[in-house]
Length: 119
Length: 115
Image (cartoon, rainbow over all chains, first blue to last red; front, side, top):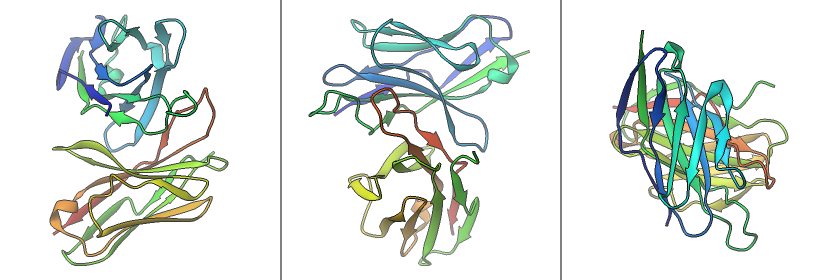
């Protein structure tokens, strides 16, 4: 079975500084990896995904993530944090479908990391 | 597009009562997911449908939980009887099949409190 670990419950960063939210995964086969963001009292919003290709993936709101197969990691990054980036961030993994090799629709989410950007 | 619509947004009920949560997916999406979010357990997939057919309900905690999708534009999650430990935020999400998709679009959630 697949799993996702987000080792930090909370990350604090000063506005304008670079931010990193960590994620490691465990899955059989080639993973499909995702980052979602949740603002207070809202549903999750898709940020970016890695399916195949370039290990550096760019997404919404200036976020990017780097896929590292050897370290089984998919860390979320942003060069310059904004106060409005403060939210709960979820990493998710989908295993490849057994029959097609394409991604499955069963996302397994990490427990989330609360990002606080301090003015 | 209005996005995924869930109702009610908040539900407070007494233990033993029946609770029905509703979801309208994004038009044209053929996958629908029900999740539960709690502080202790995080975000858990309960069940998902493809073209109105339940594909995997292994996440449904027990027989008190049931989900239906009578048509492409409507789904319900029912808890009968409800218990205090069912208190959580329940999310519905929808997705469009395709090799380059897999993005799930979440509704705003229903916050359920069982007293």
